[in-house]
Every structure is written in C-alpha cells, then in structure tokens.
Amino acid sequence: MIHTSYAPSVPGMVSIVLPCYNESEAIEQVVGDIRKVMDETGRSYEILVVDDCSTDGTAEIAEKLGLRVVRHAVNRGSGASRRTGTIEARGEIIVMLDCDGTYEPRTIPKMLSFFPKYHQVNGARTSEKGTLKLLRVPAKWLIRQLAVYVSGHQIPDLNTGLKAYYRDVMLKYLWVLPDGFSCVTSMTLAFLCNGHPVKYVSTPYYKRVGVSKFHPVKDSAKYIATILRVITFFRPLRVYLPVAALLLLAGLVFSVGHVVTTGTLQESDIILVTSGVMVGMMGLLAELIVSQRRA
Image (tube, rainbow, N blue to C red; front, side, top):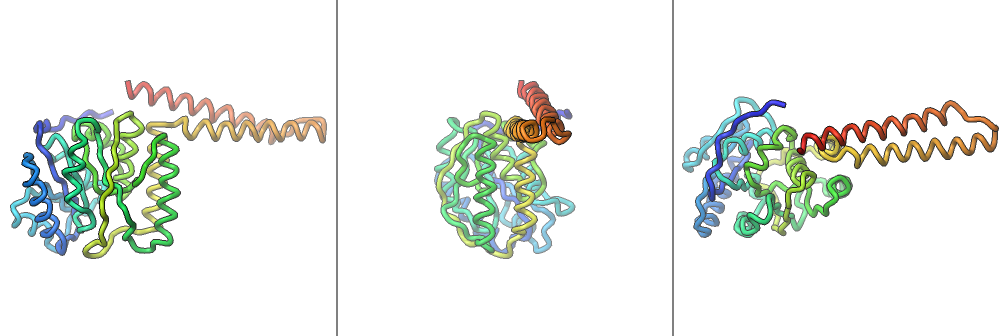
C-alpha cells in the first residue's frame, strides 16, 4: 500500500468544500448563503471550490468572489473533485455540498453541533427532486437496502451530497473512493463499515439550478458496483457466507434427492457442495486480510 503524507488540518477550522462542474448559474447564491450562515456561527472557516474543468466560467466567478479555487486540468468526475477537496482542505472538519442550490446551508450549523461525538454527519433529504422519479426512487431504495445489509446500520439517505466529516479520518479511505457520483456512497460506507459513528439530520432538498449531470441508468449501476466493491474491501463475509451457504444447501438438497431417486450422487451435486466450500474459504481468507488491514 502506498502511504502519502498530507498537510495537517488546522484544529477548530471548518472547510466548506464545493465540487463544481458548470455551476455558474448557482455558485454566487450558494456561496452567499454559506457565508451568511457560517458568519453567524462565529467559527473559523474557509470556502474551497474544486472546479472540475468547467467550461462556463464557474472558476472565474469563484475567484471573483474571493474564494480559493483548485482546478482540474481535465474533467475527472464528481468523486475525483471530492477527493481533491478533502486533500486540499485546511480545516479539521470538512463540510461538503453540491454547488447547484439543492441543499440548504442553514442545516450546516446543526450538523457541526454533533462533533466530536460523531465522525461523520449527513444531511438526510426530506424529498426527491430529481428527474425520472419512477425509476430513481425504487432504484435508490433497493441500493439503500443492500447498503443497510452490508453496514448493519439504518441509512436514511445513502447518496446525499451534504456531508460533514473529520478530514483526518476521511484521508485514510480516499483509496476506496471512485471518480463518479457513487463517491458519496463510498464515503458513508467506509465510515460505517469501519466503526466510525455516523449521524443523520433531516434537511430540505430543492430543485437544482441548471442541468443535472446524473444519468439514472449508468449511475445507478455504478452505485451498485460501488457497494459490492466496498463489501469486498470492508465486510467480505456479508456476501461470501450467504453465497456459500446457498450453494451448500442446494448441493445437499439435490444430493439427497438424487440418492433417494437414483441411488447415486450426480456430478452436479459434488460441484455445488465443492463450490460452497471454496466460496466459504475465500470469504474467510478475505475477512482475515481485512482484519489484518484494520489492525
């Protein structure tokens, strides 16, 4: 594993990170709302914009607003922007939200009030404002149920873009974060699967300003792939053991049936039982590797 040194966080400071890609229509209003809310808290804070190679002048507007801007030379994706923001942020606590006007900045002080008891606090959206709701809502529900099974925790909103977390904790899990929208899912599961306390608070959710970059089919598939990858990284037995048990059970049932009806075992019976044993052994080996990494 490659170990990278990162600049130390500033104790007590909050970094508001805004991943941006072509958000020129919304960024000025979002920044203004954040500044108003954070000024009222009296906390030390910065606003950091990560521009993912916007073509509409988003970065230039951010600089005119006096913000620190980190630019990607090429478009790398929402997840890559969140990784960059976590690395470049100076604050002990990072608050990250989309720069499209969908999230309510007034939720931020409430989220910050739960530190240090929790290591990550998420804004659980109270409504669905995305397009293609008939497809998005059931898909999100199924993906969330899979994540609940993996993590062993109830998750009101798996892919919320409003998150607050300790920077030093997240730096340990940057390697698991993908470049796309499923990054926020990985951020949540990385904390939950490794024993970090996570809190959810309700937050309003508004119709976005501008055009959505979310593709309901492709990005939903990526969410599922992300959860399966996180399972392998952090909770392998959650998948391997049920599969092994299913194969063994099927093998035993078919074996008994074939012995009763034909008096002999079939090759398929032996294959099912052997496969179940092998999958179970692979799961135990994967769990051992994960346990050593945690230590």
